[in-house]
Length: 381
Image (cartoon, rainbow, N blue to C red; front, side, top):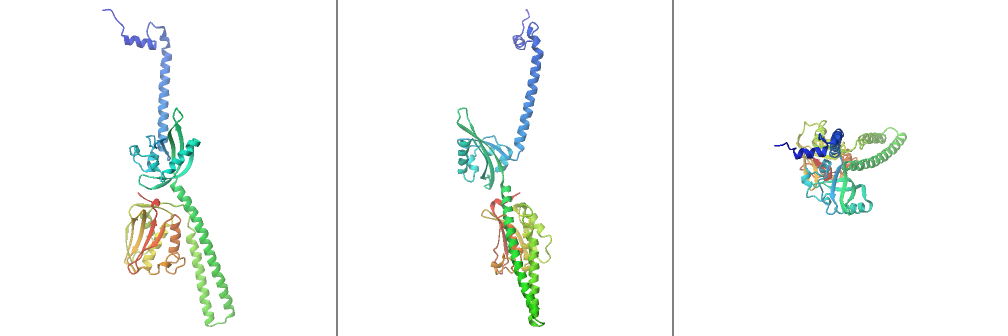
């Protein structure tokens, strides 16, 4: 049987020009070089795509794409987006609509209207909602993508969680306001005390030795003590706002606050769970004051420090089994003889980050101080 060339080989030779009978075989080195160049270009493209994917996945800003019409979130989201909104994987957002991520769904329509008229919106501050119901403050930018017919098709966007940044700015503003207020009040009080002191000294110059002189001398001593106490108070509140508010572990703050109190006369029971609160670092000083007051004033045998959820708030309580508090209206007043400046200063420190403090115990059954943390300022770990 005569030799017949394999049609597939003939076709291959015809395409790439390497047949011994083809004059195109001279093109083979150029074709081989082109193939090599193409392979190198593909490798470079693959490497570039991998670098881009790594960049997108590792940035701390959420990236996403949603359908224009119904707001359905597509698979084009990065890890930061999932983390910001509390989702575990892309599968968890398949049925999520963009409007569900807004605290006020109408905000999405407002931003879409802006994007339609301007093409995009940048750096809009919006209250967003995580899957666990907790709200965050986001800085959102959107770009409207149109199809080949010029009709709106997708919304591409990036979002940054600026909750901590905004809360720190607000806390700094509050701290400055309180420092100015406290400085003004203290300066006014000291000036009044100095005026009284000068008056007493003037009277003493006119009085000779005797009962009247001794009475004036006692008033002078008390006035000097008041001035010393007020100056000492300025040393305490000058620390307000020195450090930015931060997320603080409650159990760590409680244990640190107990390091310098006398625990020999009272049994302390602690069960605060695994919570972090956004507060001024001086919150440790607040916890110290509450523990110190219970030990010094309550005549209690036990002090219970714990946490509980009340509505949407976290309550950190300091409860003793002592004599309780009768005149509660004086507790947080500045200069109250029982609490001194401790409770007044504690309330001011907590208020910097909108945390409240109250006393809810029953007289004769013990005191209960509650530190009330708003829902957006605590989290578990």
